[in-house]
Structure formats: structure tokens, C-alpha cells
Image (cartoon, rainbow, N blue to C red; front, side, top):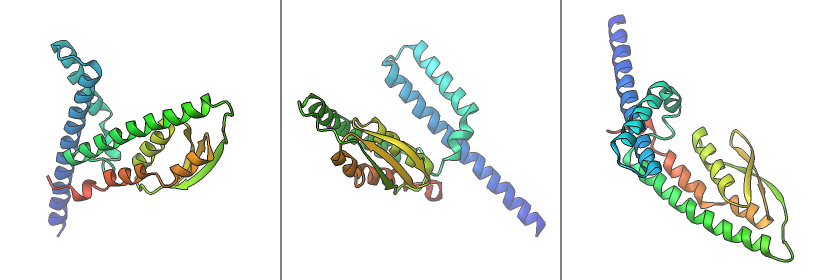
Length: 186
């Protein structure tokens, strides 16, 4: 019986190691793509530096990335969902910039600073943090404080504060976090 348990533990450790290597390679690939986007260059020197630093980051800080592996497993489906999320975020950011510009340029300055506390739908920490950062990066709103599943938000107007509480971006974030390592099928 002990041999069976020992063998089972070894097999689980090997599978975990395999999944960690695969996830680290995917993170490295994502970092390389991000590097190429940032540099906008395909020179061999730029690519070499990007590959070198991507693998160094995933080698030395990979355990931090893997601690929340269940939240964002880097798969094609999640990458597409993340691109969709950031695309929608850019649209919302432009619209919020227009709203803030209208408020600031208005002679009456219809500012009603408001705090609101909302309960977050995403279950994983990394999803909550990304969503809170999305709120902060949207002009006119700032995430002030987050404890467990509650988030305190400061908004420039009461309308902006109440629009955040039912924001569709939160549902998009929940859709991204659905696919975790529990349902890893590749």
C-alpha cells in the first residue's frame, strides 16, 4: 500500500512539474509577444534581449506567476478573452474621457464626488485586482480600498459611481477566470 501511495505521489509531482514547465513556457511566450509589441522591432538584438529577459523572468519569478495559476491559465481561449476584455476597456476609457472632459469643461462643473462600496463577482485575487485596476484606469473613477470581495470606489459623479456597480466588464472578468487548471484539457 505504501509503495502505491509513494508511486502516486511521484506521478502527481511529475505531472505538476510538467504543467509548471508548460505554463512557464506560455508565460515566456506571452512576455516575448508583449516585448515585440512594446519595441515594435524585429531586429535580432531586440528579439534576443526580449527572449533572454522573458525566460529570466519566468525562471526566477515563475513561482509568483504559478501561485495564481488557477486564475489565469494562459490558453488560446483565455488570451482571446483577455484581448476582448482590453479592447472593451479601451472603448470604455475613451467614453469615460469624453464624459470627464464634458464635466470639466462645463461652466457649472457638475461634480458630485461619491464613494460607493460594491461586492465583487470574481472569485480569484488576480481577477479582482485586474478589475479594480480597470476601474482605476477609467477616468472619473478610482478604486480606493479592497478587502476580500468588497471594493470601495471613488467617482467624480454619482452617476459614474452607480454605473460601476453593474458594469459589464465585471462579467467579462468572470468569464476569463472560469477556465482554471481544474479544467486543463491540453
